[in-house]
Length: 83
Image (cartoon, rainbow, N blue to C red; front, side):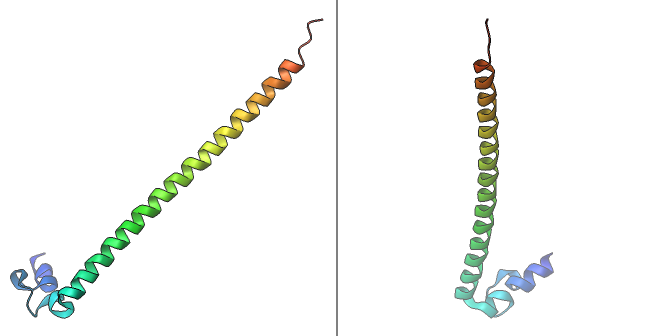
């Protein structure tokens, strides 16, 4: 694990000419981290939108069920015959 971190960030996290910081520089590293954060946030937003879509679909189904029940009750009340 330490070898991998040294290869990525330089030996002892010395951001000199070794590792990814040496290749990208501080501006490139900033852009890389910003891109990763943007990807993470986009993924979270997509998950939230999927959740909201599922909630809306369930609410529509619930509304339709209640409407159908009300229609059945109305028909039953209209068909009452006390005579």
